[in-house]
View 1: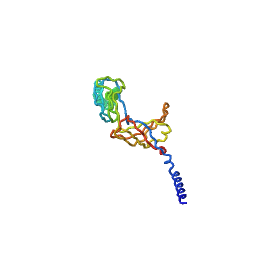
View 2: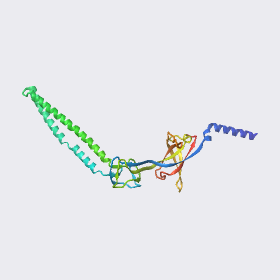
View 3: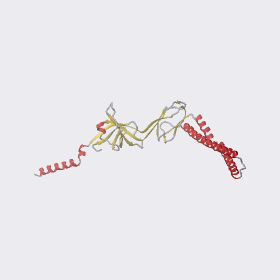
View 4: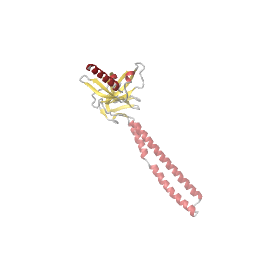
Length: 279
């Protein structure tokens, strides 16, 4: 009798457990293979042609955002900037016309007062001075507009000069220098490869049914074998492709992970583990 009651009691407990925690019974750990890639990876070039005159870095160097990596010949561009700067700085014409305008304004005021009070000045003289004053105002406006155009042209010359240097668009490490000093480069020639490995992506191509078990921001376990000891870390799903590759029928998924000490080298193979039924 006691054994029958115990069996019934166990059956009741199992039924309750199934009702309360059905996901635990359905959960399954899934493992997919993939590889790592850098968080940022760019092969850099310049949008002008010219000869490489100086390379400021070498492969393996760590660089900061905005740091100059190499320079093209820029003698002509520097001269153009200097020429434009001289034009902008020269304000002799504006100063001369401004003084002329002040003198004409004073004469016009005196002539107008004489014309209106005593009538000793012919109207024609007053009108001529008004015209001369108006022409001086127009000339001053023209010179001021010219100066603004010269300032814009100086900015353009500076930008053209800046294009002769290649700067790092982000902080990272020089992975490859593709050009040598003295070589000529054409428009958009690739010169330097820059990578940032402080973070990385684990990339996997998986079946559609498996990818449906994942969601953006979901934590996953990443495992790698380095030959010395296995590395295990946590990543977060950062990208689930909205399309499926028609050739393979697989869907690309990326999990981002932190790699501040650089223990994971981009290109390493590994596996991603997660539990189905929990997303």
